[in-house]
Image (cartoon, rainbow, N blue to C red; front, side, top):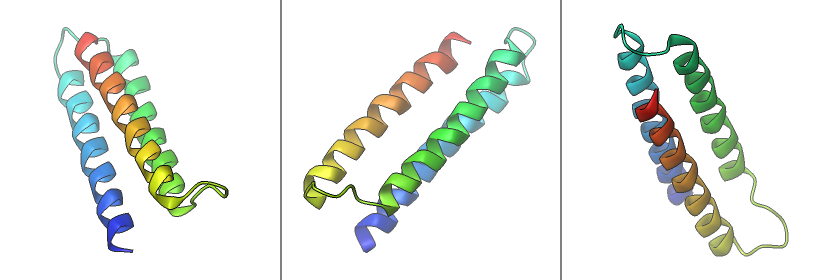
Length: 88
């Protein structure tokens, strides 16, 4: 269970940093505030989705493969969100 706990903390920290970046950018005059609000909602949804996936391992997959895939999916999604935040 410690691994799930650590993974949840990592997801929370990364999503928190992405959300904080959105908030910081929304305080500037040059940023598109509507786009940033949409990105903040997407970050919150991503957090909820991945925590739910951590809690419920897909049947038919070994836990090791499931968590490897989950980490790869989260890394891809976090990078995508980060790129979108930079472009905003």
